[in-house]
Length: 260
Length: 242
Image (tube, rainbow over all chains, first blue to last red; front, side):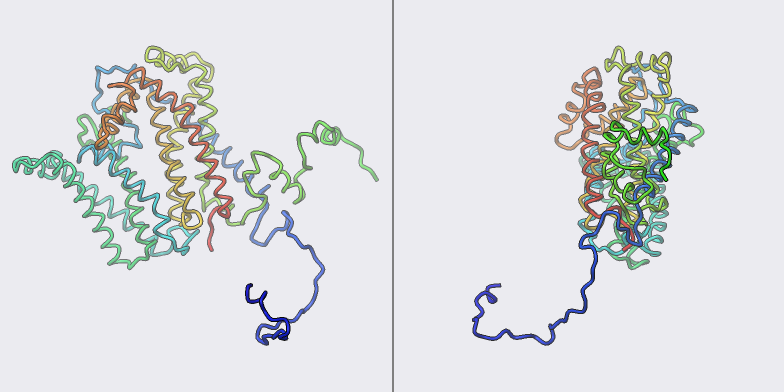
C-alpha cells in the first residue's frame, strides 16, 4: 500500500498486459444468498433430519421401555460392611481396570494406564492432522485390514498373558517370587515389569503393522486406537463373565447368579 | 374464490396462536427454515445440512442416542429423587419403596438403570465411530477433546449413581472403585479421603456421591454438551467425505 500511496502522480499508470481483465457482462440477480437456497448436496433439516431424530428416538424409547418392563434392575440385600461378597466386583465398565489390578500394581493398573491412555486419545488430533480419509470408515481398505489385524493380535496377546499369569499364580510370570528372592523392592515386579511387558507388546504391534502394511500416520494410529478399543471391551468381558470367587478364571455359566 | 374458514384456520390465525408459533405450516422451504430458526430447541440445528449428514449408517445415531439417554436419565432421575432418601439408614428402604409401592416406581428405576448402562455403551461406541471415520481431524480437534472429557464425566455419573441403592452390589462395587482411587501415586490417601469423605464408605460418602450424581456432574455434562453441540455447527456440521 505504501508504494501505491507514494507513487509519483506525473508517471502514467502502467498496465500489466498479463493481468489485464475485461468486463464480460453484467448479470441481474440477487446480491445475497437466502437461507432457503439449497445446493444440490444439501437438504432441509426440517423434515430430512428431524424425521430421523424423531424416529430413532421413538424406536429407542420403545426398546428402553420394553427392556425395563421385562428385566428388573438388580437390588441385593442391604449394604453390610462386615459381609464381603466373593467376588466383589466394580461396575462392568471398570472391570477391565479390575482385571489389570490382578496382574500389576494398583497404581499402574487403576490410575496410570487409564490416565495415560485417555491423555493419548485426547492428543490424537494434534498428532494426526492430515485431512486424508475423513468421512470414510477405517480410512481405506488397508485401514480396515489393520483394524482386523489389531483386533486379533490384541485378543490373542491378552488371552496369552492372562493365562500365563494365572498359571504362575498371578506372580507376574513367576518374576515376583524371583525378584523377592533377589531382595528387589515390591515395585520392581508390580510396576516396572508390567510396564515393560505392556511396552513390548505395543512396540510389537507397531513393528508388525509397519512391516506388514507400510502404514501412514493415520493408519498407525488406527492400530493403536484399535488396541485400546478392543482391550477395553475384551478385558471388561473377562472381568465380567470369566472371573468367579477369588477372582479365579471360571466359565460364564458357572458364575454365581448375582453376577450374571 | 375464498375457501371457507375451518376451525383449524381460526385457531392458527388467532392472535394467541400467532404469538406462540411464528411460522406457517412447514410445507414451504421458507416455513421449514423458520420452524428450525424460531424454535429454541430446534435451532441447535442449522436450517439446511449436507445430504451425507442424514445417512444413518454413517453415524448410527450414536451421538444423538447418547444425548437422548441423558434426557431419559434426567427425566427418570428427577422422578426417582421424589422418593429416594440419601441416608445410610433410609436409602435402601426408599429403594424398596420405589420398587414395591410407588406407581411405576420399578419401571422408572429400571429405565434409569438400563439407560445409564446404555449411555456408557453409546458414548464409548460414539467415540469409536468418530475415530474410525477420522472425524477428529482439523478443524474438529478441540471438539474431540471435549468428547473425551464427556466420556470421563459419563463414567463418573454412572459410578456415583452406582452407590445410591445402598445394597451389597453398590457398596462393594464402590469399595473396589474407591480402592483404585486410593492407589493413586503420591496423593493416594488424599484422593481416597476426598472421594469417601471419611476413612470408609459411610454417610459422608453417600451424600457426596448423591450431590455429585444429581446436580454437580449433570451440570458439568450439560455444560460440556452445550460446547460439544455448538462446536459441531461452528466446525461445519458433522464430518463427511471430502
